[in-house]
Image (tube, rainbow, N blue to C red; front, side, top):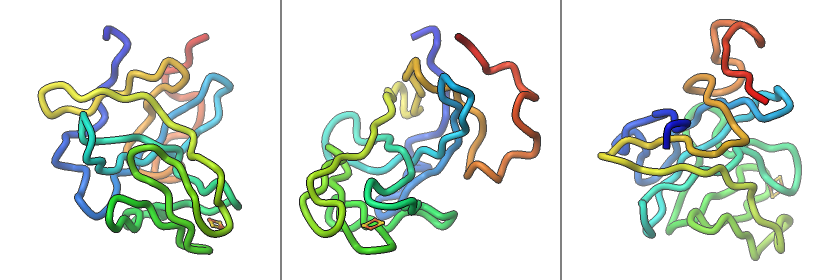
Length: 139
Ligand code: FES
């Protein structure tokens, strides 16, 4: 767990919404990720903040719409299981969201995915500094 980065407190993941942060993938691309509630252990899941159908964010800054354990796409209404990321309805039917590995320790959500480095809270454009200004890059 030495590479794990604390990204949020469990209490920052709302029951009916999401907590958004920005990470950098292995190619240097900034990627938005949402933490959402899931009834299965450890109670939180992390998904790339984009619908599989078209280029549409679930969380545009006010939290994703989540109802009955499903993330609802704001564009065409497909619903994704918050725990599995799978969608069996609407335009995105038959797809699944790309997941990001996390862990929860002592009510702290940790980013444990070796393909991503945590950059900052919020969306891609919420960071104060430009790309390359931090030392998170690793190969
Ligand atoms: S963009 Fe999400 S269902 Fe179409």
